[in-house]
Each structure stands twice: as C-alpha cells, then as structure tokens.
Length: 299
Length: 211
Image (cartoon, rainbow over all chains, first blue to last red; front, side, top):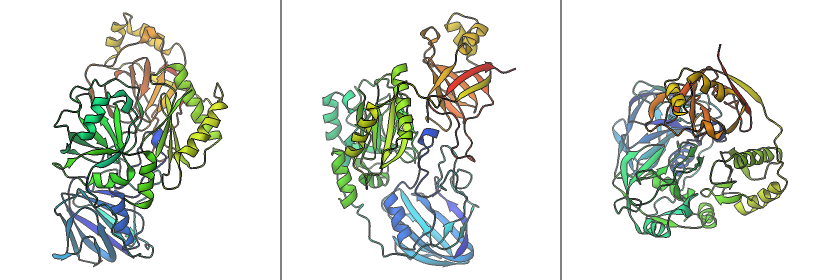
C-alpha cells in the first residue's frame, strides 16, 4: 500500500510520532513518542500499522488523499471522525482512496488522538526514530508540528491486522504515583496535603508538561530548595519555585533542578495525558511493585 | 555509600551525594563507566548526571530489586580513577556580553579573569540538560559567581556560559540564567551522527583563547 496525504488543516501540535527515540538522554534528548501510548497502539493494531502515526490534538485536523489508497486506524480520546463528511466509528478504521477527505473534530473528552496506516510513514529516521521532538527540533517534518499544505507520504506494507481490544484507560479516580526523588525534602504535612488535595489541569499544557492549579495551596508555603540538577522521567511531578506543580510529559527536559514530590506510574500516564484543562485530578501513592503489577496485569 | 532511589517505575537512580562536589561527581562518572564495561542485564539505558547515575529498565520484564543487587556488586569494585578520558581543546572567543560584569564581580580585569578561567583543564561533569549541553568544572572557589538574576531568553549555539563554579557550553540555541562569557565554534551536537554528541562525562576540557 502506498498513499500520499495532504494536510488540509492541522491543529497546533499535530505531530508525527513513533514509539520514541530511546537511549539519547545523555545527549540531552528525551524519548518523545505518543502522549497516550495505548491509544497509539490500538490505532495501529486494527490496521496492522507500519512505522509511525499522526498524533492529533483536541483542535482536530483534516487530511486529503492525493494519491494511492490506504487503510487508516484511529483511536485515542473522544473525537469525531468523518470520511467525506460521513461519520465513522471512533475508535475504528476506514479504507481511503484518492480524493477522500478525513476530518477529525474534538468530541467530549481527551486531548490526543492517533491516525495509523497499513503502511510506513515515509520519513527518514533521525537518531533511530521519526518521532517529532519539537522542543529540540528533531524528527517528523523538519522537527516541527504539521501544518496546512504539508504532505505525508506512506510507503510499503504494514503488518497483519489484529483484533483490537479496547485498552483499559477508562479508569476514573486518583492517579497513582510513586513517591518522587525529593519526596523526603517535603515536610510530612505537605505530603499529606498533597494526597488529600484536588488539583485542576490548567490551560498551560503541551507535550513537555502539564501545569496544575494548586487551588488549596498545598505548595504555597513550601520552601523550595535549590537542588543539584538530576535525571527526570515522564510523569514526574515537579514543584516550580512559585509553588506551581507541573507534570513532566514525553518531551520533558532530560534533567531538572526543581524538587519532584511524586511520579505518576506508567500505567496511569496515558490517562493523565488525556485530561483536558479544567479537569480535576488527585493522586494516590502506590509502591513500585504495585505499579509494575498494574502495568503487567491491567488495573 | 551511595543511595539507590526509584525514579518512577522504570528507573533507578544511584545517587552519590545531594550537592555537587568533586568526589560525588567523580564517583558518579566512574560508576557510569563501570556499567559500560560491565552492563547489568535488564538495564536499557545508563545516564550519568552531576552526582548520580540513572539506570532505566523495562518494567514489563525487569524487577528493580535484581538491578539493585547488581549495582551493589559493581559499587564494591568501583575503581577510583577512570581511564577512558578524552582530552579536548575548545577554542573560545571571550567576548560575551557578561564577561565584563563577571570579571568586575571578582574584582579582576577581563583579561585576568580569562587567564584564570583557562589556567587549568576542567572535567566534563555531566551532559544531557539539553542537546549536546555540557557542564565543565569545577573551578576554584575564588572564581565562584552566582547565576544571573534574570534569564536571557535565547543565547546562540556555541555560547560559553559561566556560573556556580562551572563553565558550560550550549550546543543549541537556548534560554539561560548563566553568564555568557564567550562563544566557540565547537558545537557538541550533530543529529546526523550517532551518537550525536562527542563529549562525555569525565573528559578533560581546556579552554583557550581563539586566535
């Protein structure tokens, strides 16, 4: 299969992603990759996708097939997808041929959706990956988000499609965390307050981090120590000098000097990425062993 | 002995101190080198930092307890001095916008500051804050100046930065709160190469005035 897609419209931060550019932290490059990995994989499973996919944001996007044909799989968040104006199931698949228009508009929830194809996205990998890291301008199309007029070419064949199971991302409730690198630097009263409090996802969110509004002032009186810069991992909840908590996401800076009270576990980070601004979030501590158990066996 | 801490559910951090000192940095660098020579099964990435080493593992297949045990074995055999040091000379034009202010704060002339700055070889303390970014040090206490009170929104690639007893080299355009004392054509980042960077923690760095 091969096809060429023309970008008719792309919301901000629409990017090409794959599973990420791993092993480059010492060179100063975080892995990037899909904000919601399970959704990315689900979109790929249903079409036996090849290399890469397109990450759509809540602003939506529109593509036109200008040559060839392909199968497209879509998943992640709640979006409305139309093929030539006709609504298709989300998540789902569609066969596209030349002239078809695929339009995605935001639905009731979620920040990120994925399009994957029964072919590879035809982009030369940079340092082993085509994932866009727009902070360091690597991967994708010239290291930047997609914009109107861009052309995304597909080449080769995907793998065989498999029956998809809806991933278990619908859990509500607190986000599970393991205590962070600097948890002991916070007084126990602040740690207790952190677990009782509800935070609100602010409008300041992107692939690097999600700022939270600390309405009950958990960190308003915290003495933020100056720390030696140390390794960062996605999901780290870092407390800025003014007391603002920020959850570091896939395009995080590889090291950081602000204290980190806790880290959202891998199994819950996809769900967190989909929380829209205005959503209320809370945190619950678990052990590393429990985090692994959840990751291996599902919630 | 260092402490071994979880960093989320996919990493262990072996931390040799909580403040940047010469011994803690040397120990972290030597330990990272030991892990390159004697890898630990299940560890997918080893990242030396200023005073720690991150060991990333795949949580689907690897339990951190086993890694921690292997870490203990390698710590016991940790060599004092590393042996793979590469020596670099970094020609630098010392004409940065903050040079005069830095020299004044140390009560010396700009020329005397540059001479003192370049007097002895530094060590690459860590890499990884941004693409190709390196921390070099440690300067003697008499060259200690704090960071700037305000952040410059962008400095160009090749900027030579100075603060907190260290000199850093930016390999990409970036914001910084460090003093900009000069610029070099040595750009430690090339995404066409793999690895994309050349300097490693433990390497020796000598700054010299570009002619």
